[in-house]
Amino acid sequence: MLWGGDQDTDWDRDDGLPTIISIATHVGLSGVPVFGSDIAGYSSFAAPATTKELFLRWDALAALQPVMRTHHGSSECANWSFDRDAETLAHHRRWASVHVRLLPLFRALTKEAVASGLPLVRHPWLVEPDHPPLWAPHADLFFLGDDLLVAPVVTEGATTRTLDLPGEGWWPLLGQSPIQAKPGPDGLVALEASAPVTELPAFVRPGAVLPLTRQVVDSFYGATEPGITDRSDLEGLTLALYPDTAGALAPQEVAGVTIEATNLSPTTDLTKATWDGSSLPACTASSPTPPCATPAGALLPGPGTLSAGTATITLTGTPDATPIELALAGRAFGTLANPTPMTNLTPDIPPPCE
Figure 1 (cartoon, helix red, strand yellow):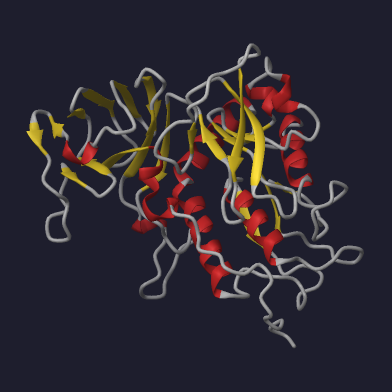
Figure 2: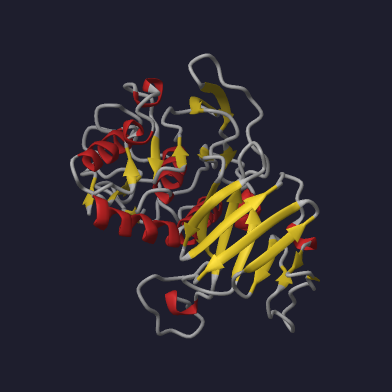
Protein backbone atom coordinates (compact mmCIF):
# COMPACT_ATOMS: atom_id res chain seq x y z
CA MET A 1 0.00 0.00 0.00
CA LEU A 2 0.95 3.63 -0.36
CA TRP A 3 0.24 6.51 1.99
CA GLY A 4 -0.14 10.09 0.87
CA GLY A 5 3.05 11.51 2.35
CA ASP A 6 3.36 14.20 4.98
CA GLN A 7 0.39 16.39 4.06
CA ASP A 8 0.13 19.85 5.55
CA THR A 9 -2.34 20.24 8.40
CA ASP A 10 -4.62 22.57 6.46
CA TRP A 11 -7.22 22.88 3.69
CA ASP A 12 -4.83 24.03 0.97
CA ARG A 13 -4.87 22.47 -2.49
CA ASP A 14 -1.08 22.55 -2.62
CA ASP A 15 -0.53 19.89 0.06
CA GLY A 16 -3.54 19.84 2.39
CA LEU A 17 -6.77 17.86 2.71
CA PRO A 18 -7.90 18.08 -0.95
CA THR A 19 -4.71 16.36 -2.12
CA ILE A 20 -5.75 13.11 -0.42
CA ILE A 21 -8.36 12.66 -3.15
CA SER A 22 -6.13 13.47 -6.11
CA ILE A 23 -3.21 11.38 -4.81
CA ALA A 24 -5.41 8.38 -4.01
CA THR A 25 -7.11 8.34 -7.40
CA HIS A 26 -3.95 8.94 -9.43
CA VAL A 27 -1.77 6.37 -7.70
CA GLY A 28 -4.67 3.98 -8.32
CA LEU A 29 -4.40 4.76 -12.03
CA SER A 30 -0.67 4.04 -11.69
CA GLY A 31 -1.23 0.52 -10.40
CA VAL A 32 -1.16 1.03 -6.60
CA PRO A 33 -4.37 -0.60 -5.31
CA VAL A 34 -4.32 0.27 -1.58
CA PHE A 35 -4.02 3.80 -0.21
CA GLY A 36 -4.28 5.71 3.06
CA SER A 37 -3.20 8.99 4.64
CA ASP A 38 -2.33 10.54 7.98
CA ILE A 39 -5.71 11.73 9.28
CA ALA A 40 -5.65 15.54 9.59
CA GLY A 41 -2.20 15.75 8.03
CA TYR A 42 1.32 15.63 9.40
CA SER A 43 3.38 18.74 8.55
CA SER A 44 2.77 21.95 10.49
CA PHE A 45 6.13 23.53 9.66
CA ALA A 46 4.53 26.09 7.31
CA ALA A 47 0.87 25.41 8.13
CA PRO A 48 -1.30 26.05 11.18
CA ALA A 49 -1.90 23.20 13.58
CA THR A 50 -4.75 20.80 12.87
CA THR A 51 -8.12 22.19 13.93
CA LYS A 52 -11.07 20.23 15.25
CA GLU A 53 -13.01 20.88 12.03
CA LEU A 54 -10.15 19.64 9.85
CA PHE A 55 -9.84 16.50 11.93
CA LEU A 56 -13.57 15.74 11.69
CA ARG A 57 -13.62 16.13 7.90
CA TRP A 58 -10.43 14.14 7.27
CA ASP A 59 -11.47 11.40 9.70
CA ALA A 60 -14.74 10.67 7.87
CA LEU A 61 -13.00 10.71 4.48
CA ALA A 62 -10.37 8.24 5.71
CA ALA A 63 -13.09 5.83 6.88
CA LEU A 64 -14.03 5.20 3.25
CA GLN A 65 -10.48 4.53 2.12
CA PRO A 66 -8.69 1.21 2.71
CA VAL A 67 -6.30 2.40 5.44
CA MET A 68 -7.72 4.57 8.24
CA ARG A 69 -4.77 5.86 10.26
CA THR A 70 -4.45 8.59 12.87
CA HIS A 71 -1.18 10.41 13.49
CA HIS A 72 -0.08 13.02 16.03
CA GLY A 73 1.78 14.95 13.31
CA SER A 74 4.82 17.16 13.57
CA SER A 75 3.14 19.43 16.18
CA GLU A 76 1.97 16.79 18.60
CA CYS A 77 1.01 19.23 21.33
CA ALA A 78 -0.81 21.73 19.11
CA ASN A 79 -2.59 19.45 16.64
CA TRP A 80 -6.18 18.46 17.37
CA SER A 81 -6.37 14.69 17.92
CA PHE A 82 -9.01 11.97 17.97
CA ASP A 83 -9.27 11.99 21.79
CA ARG A 84 -8.93 15.72 22.46
CA ASP A 85 -12.55 16.05 23.55
CA ALA A 86 -15.58 13.78 23.97
CA GLU A 87 -17.27 14.97 20.77
CA THR A 88 -14.24 14.19 18.62
CA LEU A 89 -13.82 10.79 20.25
CA ALA A 90 -17.47 9.96 19.58
CA HIS A 91 -17.07 11.06 15.95
CA HIS A 92 -13.93 8.97 15.52
CA ARG A 93 -15.54 5.94 17.15
CA ARG A 94 -18.52 6.23 14.81
CA TRP A 95 -16.53 6.52 11.57
CA ALA A 96 -13.98 3.92 12.65
CA SER A 97 -16.99 1.64 13.24
CA VAL A 98 -18.29 2.36 9.72
CA HIS A 99 -14.80 1.48 8.45
CA VAL A 100 -14.93 -1.81 10.36
CA ARG A 101 -18.38 -2.64 8.98
CA LEU A 102 -17.01 -2.16 5.45
CA LEU A 103 -14.36 -4.89 5.92
CA PRO A 104 -16.12 -7.42 3.60
CA LEU A 105 -16.29 -4.77 0.87
CA PHE A 106 -12.59 -3.93 1.28
CA ARG A 107 -11.80 -7.67 1.12
CA ALA A 108 -13.83 -8.17 -2.05
CA LEU A 109 -12.20 -5.17 -3.73
CA THR A 110 -8.75 -6.39 -2.68
CA LYS A 111 -9.42 -9.75 -4.36
CA GLU A 112 -10.52 -7.84 -7.46
CA ALA A 113 -7.32 -5.79 -7.35
CA VAL A 114 -5.21 -8.97 -7.26
CA ALA A 115 -7.12 -10.43 -10.21
CA SER A 116 -7.47 -7.34 -12.40
CA GLY A 117 -5.19 -4.58 -11.12
CA LEU A 118 -8.13 -2.27 -10.43
CA PRO A 119 -7.50 -0.14 -7.32
CA LEU A 120 -9.88 -0.01 -4.39
CA VAL A 121 -10.10 3.81 -4.55
CA ARG A 122 -10.96 4.59 -8.16
CA HIS A 123 -10.60 7.73 -10.24
CA PRO A 124 -14.09 8.64 -11.54
CA TRP A 125 -12.77 8.27 -15.10
CA LEU A 126 -12.27 4.54 -14.46
CA VAL A 127 -15.89 4.11 -13.42
CA GLU A 128 -17.76 6.80 -15.39
CA PRO A 129 -15.66 7.64 -18.48
CA ASP A 130 -18.69 9.10 -20.27
CA HIS A 131 -19.33 11.77 -17.62
CA PRO A 132 -16.38 14.23 -17.65
CA PRO A 133 -17.82 16.56 -14.95
CA LEU A 134 -17.20 13.76 -12.43
CA TRP A 135 -13.49 13.68 -13.19
CA ALA A 136 -12.84 17.33 -14.01
CA PRO A 137 -10.06 19.09 -12.05
CA HIS A 138 -11.16 19.87 -8.50
CA ALA A 139 -14.29 17.73 -8.79
CA ASP A 140 -13.11 16.26 -5.47
CA LEU A 141 -14.76 12.88 -5.96
CA PHE A 142 -13.66 9.28 -5.79
CA PHE A 143 -15.25 5.87 -6.05
CA LEU A 144 -14.73 3.00 -3.64
CA GLY A 145 -15.14 0.15 -6.08
CA ASP A 146 -17.67 0.87 -8.82
CA ASP A 147 -20.77 1.43 -6.69
CA LEU A 148 -19.84 3.84 -3.90
CA LEU A 149 -19.30 7.49 -4.88
CA VAL A 150 -17.65 9.61 -2.18
CA ALA A 151 -17.77 13.42 -2.28
CA PRO A 152 -15.79 14.72 0.72
CA VAL A 153 -16.09 18.29 1.98
CA VAL A 154 -12.64 19.87 1.58
CA THR A 155 -13.52 23.53 2.17
CA GLU A 156 -13.24 25.05 5.63
CA GLY A 157 -16.59 26.20 7.01
CA ALA A 158 -18.70 24.51 4.31
CA THR A 159 -21.85 22.68 5.35
CA THR A 160 -23.08 21.71 1.87
CA ARG A 161 -21.42 20.01 -1.06
CA THR A 162 -22.29 20.35 -4.76
CA LEU A 163 -21.69 17.36 -7.02
CA ASP A 164 -23.07 15.46 -10.00
CA LEU A 165 -24.50 11.95 -9.83
CA PRO A 166 -24.41 9.76 -12.97
CA GLY A 167 -28.13 9.10 -13.37
CA GLU A 168 -31.12 8.90 -11.05
CA GLY A 169 -31.91 6.73 -8.08
CA TRP A 170 -28.64 6.96 -6.13
CA TRP A 171 -28.93 6.36 -2.37
CA PRO A 172 -27.07 8.16 0.42
CA LEU A 173 -24.86 5.50 1.98
CA LEU A 174 -26.41 6.03 5.42
CA GLY A 175 -29.83 7.17 4.16
CA GLN A 176 -33.18 5.42 4.00
CA SER A 177 -34.46 6.68 0.65
CA PRO A 178 -32.90 7.48 -2.74
CA ILE A 179 -32.23 10.95 -4.12
CA GLN A 180 -35.43 12.24 -5.72
CA ALA A 181 -34.10 14.16 -8.72
CA LYS A 182 -34.13 13.63 -12.45
CA PRO A 183 -31.00 13.82 -14.62
CA GLY A 184 -30.48 16.63 -17.08
CA PRO A 185 -29.77 16.25 -20.81
CA ASP A 186 -26.20 15.18 -20.00
CA GLY A 187 -27.47 12.27 -17.90
CA LEU A 188 -26.25 13.83 -14.66
CA VAL A 189 -28.19 14.78 -11.53
CA ALA A 190 -26.92 18.08 -10.12
CA LEU A 191 -27.07 17.85 -6.35
CA GLU A 192 -26.38 20.13 -3.43
CA ALA A 193 -25.90 17.71 -0.57
CA SER A 194 -26.30 18.68 3.06
CA ALA A 195 -22.99 18.08 4.82
CA PRO A 196 -22.85 19.00 8.51
CA VAL A 197 -19.33 18.90 9.86
CA THR A 198 -19.62 15.31 11.13
CA GLU A 199 -21.12 13.94 7.90
CA LEU A 200 -19.61 12.65 4.65
CA PRO A 201 -21.62 12.83 1.41
CA ALA A 202 -21.39 9.31 -0.01
CA PHE A 203 -23.80 7.69 -2.45
CA VAL A 204 -24.52 4.11 -3.54
CA ARG A 205 -25.39 3.14 -7.09
CA PRO A 206 -29.02 2.06 -7.53
CA GLY A 207 -29.23 -1.72 -7.72
CA ALA A 208 -26.08 -2.31 -5.65
CA VAL A 209 -25.60 -4.56 -2.62
CA LEU A 210 -22.83 -3.77 -0.11
CA PRO A 211 -21.45 -6.55 2.10
CA LEU A 212 -20.83 -5.52 5.72
CA THR A 213 -19.78 -7.15 8.96
CA ARG A 214 -22.68 -7.69 11.33
CA GLN A 215 -20.69 -6.50 14.32
CA VAL A 216 -18.13 -3.83 15.13
CA VAL A 217 -14.98 -5.29 16.67
CA ASP A 218 -12.17 -3.58 18.57
CA SER A 219 -9.23 -4.92 16.56
CA PHE A 220 -8.42 -6.46 13.19
CA TYR A 221 -5.08 -7.76 14.46
CA GLY A 222 -5.92 -10.24 17.20
CA ALA A 223 -6.68 -9.59 20.85
CA THR A 224 -5.81 -11.37 24.07
CA GLU A 225 -7.22 -9.03 26.72
CA PRO A 226 -10.59 -10.09 28.16
CA GLY A 227 -13.48 -8.15 26.66
CA ILE A 228 -11.52 -6.97 23.59
CA THR A 229 -13.00 -8.34 20.37
CA ASP A 230 -11.25 -9.12 17.10
CA ARG A 231 -12.01 -10.70 13.73
CA SER A 232 -12.50 -14.13 15.30
CA ASP A 233 -15.58 -12.68 17.02
CA LEU A 234 -17.24 -11.71 13.74
CA GLU A 235 -20.27 -13.85 12.89
CA GLY A 236 -22.12 -13.79 9.60
CA LEU A 237 -22.69 -10.94 7.18
CA THR A 238 -25.02 -8.02 6.64
CA LEU A 239 -26.06 -7.27 3.07
CA ALA A 240 -27.14 -3.64 2.64
CA LEU A 241 -29.65 -3.43 -0.24
CA TYR A 242 -29.93 -0.36 -2.47
CA PRO A 243 -32.58 -1.21 -5.10
CA ASP A 244 -32.83 0.58 -8.44
CA THR A 245 -35.64 2.92 -9.46
CA ALA A 246 -37.82 -0.08 -10.38
CA GLY A 247 -37.28 -1.60 -6.94
CA ALA A 248 -35.07 -4.35 -8.32
CA LEU A 249 -31.71 -5.92 -7.59
CA ALA A 250 -30.37 -7.62 -10.70
CA PRO A 251 -28.85 -11.05 -9.99
CA GLN A 252 -25.38 -10.48 -8.57
CA GLU A 253 -22.87 -12.39 -6.49
CA VAL A 254 -21.95 -10.75 -3.21
CA ALA A 255 -19.81 -12.50 -0.59
CA GLY A 256 -20.39 -15.89 -2.19
CA VAL A 257 -24.17 -15.65 -2.38
CA THR A 258 -26.21 -14.72 -5.46
CA ILE A 259 -28.97 -12.27 -4.60
CA GLU A 260 -31.80 -10.84 -6.68
CA ALA A 261 -34.92 -8.93 -5.72
CA THR A 262 -38.06 -7.33 -7.11
CA ASN A 263 -40.55 -4.72 -5.88
CA LEU A 264 -38.41 -3.33 -3.08
CA SER A 265 -39.17 0.21 -1.97
CA PRO A 266 -37.87 2.53 0.77
CA THR A 267 -40.93 1.58 2.84
CA THR A 268 -40.50 -2.20 2.52
CA ASP A 269 -40.43 -3.59 6.07
CA LEU A 270 -38.09 -6.58 6.10
CA THR A 271 -38.70 -7.07 9.82
CA LYS A 272 -42.23 -8.26 8.96
CA ALA A 273 -41.23 -10.60 6.15
CA THR A 274 -41.80 -14.32 5.65
CA TRP A 275 -38.96 -16.75 5.02
CA ASP A 276 -39.80 -19.71 2.80
CA GLY A 277 -43.43 -19.11 3.70
CA SER A 278 -43.08 -18.73 7.48
CA SER A 279 -43.33 -15.49 9.49
CA LEU A 280 -40.20 -14.25 11.21
CA PRO A 281 -40.17 -14.13 15.01
CA ALA A 282 -38.17 -11.33 16.62
CA CYS A 283 -34.51 -12.06 17.31
CA THR A 284 -33.89 -11.78 21.05
CA ALA A 285 -30.92 -12.29 23.32
CA SER A 286 -32.47 -15.54 24.50
CA SER A 287 -33.59 -16.58 21.00
CA PRO A 288 -31.17 -15.22 18.39
CA THR A 289 -31.38 -18.21 16.05
CA PRO A 290 -32.24 -17.33 12.44
CA PRO A 291 -34.55 -16.95 10.70
CA CYS A 292 -35.70 -14.04 12.82
CA ALA A 293 -36.27 -10.29 12.58
CA THR A 294 -33.58 -7.84 13.72
CA PRO A 295 -34.17 -4.12 14.38
CA ALA A 296 -32.72 -3.44 10.90
CA GLY A 297 -34.21 -6.25 8.83
CA ALA A 298 -34.18 -10.03 8.59
CA LEU A 299 -31.55 -12.49 9.86
CA LEU A 300 -31.46 -15.62 7.71
CA PRO A 301 -29.72 -18.99 8.09
CA GLY A 302 -28.62 -19.15 4.46
CA PRO A 303 -30.05 -19.39 0.93
CA GLY A 304 -33.81 -19.19 0.48
CA THR A 305 -36.60 -16.76 -0.39
CA LEU A 306 -37.74 -13.79 1.68
CA SER A 307 -41.06 -12.06 0.98
CA ALA A 308 -42.19 -8.72 2.41
CA GLY A 309 -45.46 -7.40 1.03
CA THR A 310 -45.04 -7.46 -2.74
CA ALA A 311 -41.24 -7.60 -2.50
CA THR A 312 -39.31 -10.82 -3.03
CA ILE A 313 -35.61 -11.44 -2.31
CA THR A 314 -33.96 -14.68 -3.37
CA LEU A 315 -30.60 -15.97 -2.15
CA THR A 316 -28.76 -18.88 -3.76
CA GLY A 317 -25.24 -20.28 -3.65
CA THR A 318 -22.77 -20.78 -0.82
CA PRO A 319 -22.25 -17.61 1.22
CA ASP A 320 -18.87 -16.73 2.71
CA ALA A 321 -20.45 -16.70 6.15
CA THR A 322 -23.77 -17.23 7.88
CA PRO A 323 -26.13 -16.06 9.23
CA ILE A 324 -26.98 -13.36 6.69
CA GLU A 325 -28.79 -10.19 7.69
CA LEU A 326 -30.69 -8.34 4.97
CA ALA A 327 -31.41 -4.65 5.52
CA LEU A 328 -32.42 -1.75 3.30
CA ALA A 329 -29.77 0.90 2.67
CA GLY A 330 -28.78 2.96 5.72
CA ARG A 331 -30.84 0.79 8.06
CA ALA A 332 -28.03 -1.76 7.72
CA PHE A 333 -25.74 0.59 9.68
CA GLY A 334 -28.10 0.91 12.65
CA THR A 335 -27.22 3.78 15.00
CA LEU A 336 -24.05 4.53 12.99
CA ALA A 337 -26.34 6.23 10.47
CA ASN A 338 -27.23 8.88 13.06
CA PRO A 339 -25.22 12.13 12.89
CA THR A 340 -22.67 12.64 15.65
CA PRO A 341 -23.78 15.41 18.05
CA MET A 342 -21.49 18.42 17.73
CA THR A 343 -21.83 21.62 19.71
CA ASN A 344 -18.51 23.45 19.57
CA LEU A 345 -15.80 23.48 16.90
CA THR A 346 -13.50 25.76 18.89
CA PRO A 347 -13.56 24.54 22.49
CA ASP A 348 -11.00 26.00 24.86
CA ILE A 349 -9.24 22.75 25.76
CA PRO A 350 -5.51 22.93 26.56
CA PRO A 351 -3.26 20.51 24.66
CA PRO A 352 -2.55 17.35 26.64
CA CYS A 353 1.19 18.05 26.88
CA GLU A 354 0.95 21.56 28.33
